[in-house]
Structures are given as structure tokens and as C-alpha cells.
Amino acid sequence: MDAEERWLLSQRLALQQTSRENLVQLGFFAAATLGLLLLTTLVLIRRQLQVTRRSQLALAASEESYATTIWSIGDGVVATDTQARITRMNRVAEQLTGWTLREAQGRPIEEVFHIIHEKTRARAIIPVDEVLVTGEVREIANHTLLISRQGSECPIADSAAPIRDAANNIRGVVLVFRDVTREHHAEHLIREQNELLEQHVQARTQQLHESEVRYKTVFMTSPDPISLARLSEGLYLDINDGFCSTFGWNRDEVIGKTGSDIAIWKNAADRVEFIQLVTERGGSENFEAEFATKSGKVVACLLSAKLITIQGQSCLLSVVRDITDRKRTEMALRQSEDRLNFAMERSQMATWDIDLERGVVQRSDGHDQIFGYTQKLWMWSHAVFLEHVLPQDRGMVEEKFRTAIETGLDLSVECRIQAVNDTVRWIWTCGGRRIDAEGRCHMAGIIQDITKRKHAEEELGRYRDHLQELVVARTQELDEARKTAEMASKAKSQFLANMSHEIRTPLGAISGMSRLVRREP
Image (cartoon, rainbow, N blue to C red; front, top):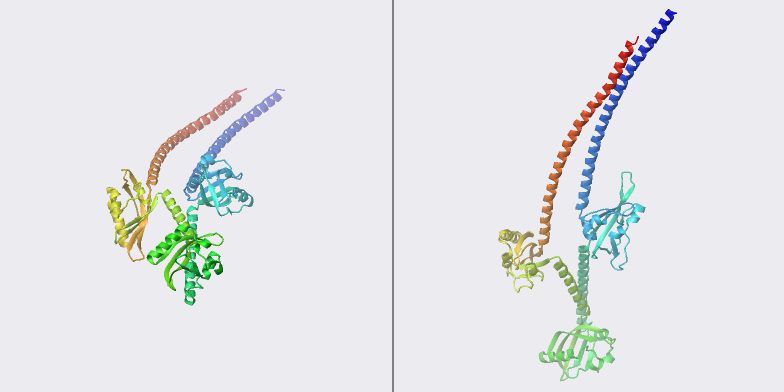
């Protein structure tokens, strides 16, 4: 019995010893596993922080580059999301629409980008929805006007394209548009010049035709109205086919009657003046008067006449030239010149032309206003111009003009002037050398008041300096953040040391328990 009990006791002791050893091994394994996990976690966290930091820096650089590019584009740019709501717009778009990005962001494109047809005034279709559906580039129709938030209008050219992500999914639409006022104005001037040239060509062709016809017959086949009448009572003795075609009467309705009988003179006072002029001078050239046709239509004409004697009677041979179309052309040209002068005045621009041989200066009406004069001076010269230039800039300006005159290179100079009201203004003038029809050398160009632009540039410089100060302040903040990160790194090391201590503490307890177990009988 004692032997059996001793055997059982030895078995129990052996089992306890095995359990203690297993428990110790398990404790060491758990500690090693926990340490490995902590180390792995630390490495992964550090790598993830580095990747995240690099991604953030790359994203920030990309965003800054993208925003700078969009802001610097010379055309208006508006971006929308898939709901046709505005997400971005650049400086030109803000100027043309009258909306700032802060005001327009999140609004529907139709609310900010208000376009109409130039002729019908009907609201034009913005192709954003169509692009979102088709995914293709679209352009707006011609003759489209953009109405700004303040109500001003300007013609634009526009295109819309889809914005796609890396997976080729449409994420929005970008609208690119530009002010084509200058192009429209240039096209209008070209059309007017072409029409004027066409009229000149037609007039010249007609003159050549008339010359050929006059060689055959001076009177009957002339395309111009020609009449022969007695001076005393104005009785028509003969008229040509041109008279009939111009005024609508046939020969039988006119011959044997006076101008008063057919009421051909629109103003009777014009006839009295014309007869008096012919009587005093023996003739007249290009007397301008209005005549009435048989249908009552008023025709503007130039009347030329020569006093001749037929069978002892004073007769008047008259040639009439219809200038109705020319009057319309002159009116159109005056209107065009008025529009051009208005546009130049609004942009504070004027033209100048110096005859280098005679020293005579021709200039547009707005020229003297740039120098502060309320009325145009009766005389202007290059010397007067230089007197207005500030002494600090006068030498440079004289050198620029001298170089342009001597070399024939284009002139372009910015300088300060002293206006008559003692204010200092900035001007820009450019031009070049030209030879007129008489072979004289001229310097001609334009001048513009750029004071506002210079002030804006100065303001921009101050803003740039302010941004530099902000960059310095931000750099200091980043330096403080770096120091904070270093302190955090030290705190992390302290934390790991504490964790290592905490891990060793339960292992000590386990080891002590094992020793107690070994001491049991």
C-alpha cells in the first residue's frame, strides 16, 4: 500500500512538474507573440503614415497645380458635377458671368450661365445635360450672348466636354467659353469693308459701262437721268431713258410740262436756289437735292447742269445722279465710326498720327482727354506730348520714339504723364512707321490710359507680398508641427518601453508561481 501511494505521489509530482513547465513555455510563447504583434503593428503603422503623408503631399501638389492652371487660363472655365451643379470656375468665368466661385458653387449651371440667342433673344440651350447623356463634346450655337449677373451682355463661343475618371466614367462636364466681342466687331468691320468695296466695284463697273455707252450716244442711252429744259419756265424739252427709269414717268408724261407740273422737286426752295446758282455761274456741279418719283418715293440726287443756248433760248442741260445708296453707305460708315469711337472711348484709347516731315499731328477726339483736357486742343505736337511725360520717364520715351523712327521697328512704351489737373497717370502707346500716298513718312499708333491696370498690378504686388508673409507663417507652423511630431515619437518610444515592462511583469508572477509549485511536498 505504501509503495502504491508513493507511486501515485510520484506520478502526481511528475504531472505537476510537466504542467508547470508547459505553463512557463506558454507564458514565454504568449510574451513573444505579443511582442512580435506590437512590433509588426508599429512597422505597419509607420509605413502607412509614410504612404499617407506622401499621398497627401502629392494630392495637395496636384490640386494646387490643377487650380493654378484653371485659374490662369485665358478663357472662361466652369466645371459641373453629374447633377449639372457648378463645382469650379476660374477668374475669367467670374468676370464674364458676374458670379464668384463662392457664390456660384453648388448652384445649377442654368442659374449662373445665362445665355440667349443674339437675334431672337430666346434662351439658348446649355449643352451640359446633352454631354452628360452622350459623353461627347458639344458646342453652343452661333450668335449666342452671355448675360452676366449684372445684366451686361457679351457674345461668346463655347464648348462643353465630359470629365472622366480613370475608369472612363463621366464625373461631370467642363464648359470653356470666351468673349468674342472683338471677333464680332472685326467680322462686322470686314463685312462693311467688303460691302463698301463691292459698292465701289459696282460703281466703277457702272462708270465703265456708262463710258462705253456715251461713246455710242451721249444722251438717249445714258443710265443717268438727263433732261433738257427751258430756263425761263422750266419746261421739259427732252428726257432720256435714264430719266424715265429713275423717276418712273415715260417721255409723253414729262415732255411739254414743267417740274412744278409733275412735282418732281421735293423742296421748291431747292429749285429756286439751283436756278439762281446756274444763272449766276452759267452752270452747277453736284448740287445736292431730293426729288420725288412718280410713285412718291424720295430719291437723293446730285444735280449737275450747264446753261446752253438753243434757238436763241436759254436752256438747261441737266444730269442727275442717284446717291440714295451712297447716302445709306455714308450713314452706315458714320454709324460704324461712331461705334468705333465709342468703343475706343470706353476702353480709354485714342489714335494719333505724326507727319514726321511737317510735324503735323492728327488725333482722335479721346486723345486729349487722356491728358486731362475736357476739350480737344486746337494744336498738338510731339513736343507737347513730351512736356506731359514725367522727367523720370522722358529720356526713355524719347529714345523709344527715336529708335522706332530710325529703324522702322514697332514702338511700344509705357510711361507716366502729368495731366492738366496735376494727377499722375500711366499711359501705353504703340505704333509704327508708315508712308502715306504722297510718299511722306508718318508715325502712327494708339494711346491708352492704363492707370487702372497699373494700380491693379500694384495691388497684385501687395497681395503677392501678403501671400509671401503667409507662406513664411505657414513654414513656421510646419516647423512647430515637426517638433510636435518628434515629441510624439519620443512619447511612442516611452510607451513601448512601458509596454515591455508591463509584459515582463506577468511573466515574473508566472515564474514565481512556478517556484512555489516546485516547493510543494
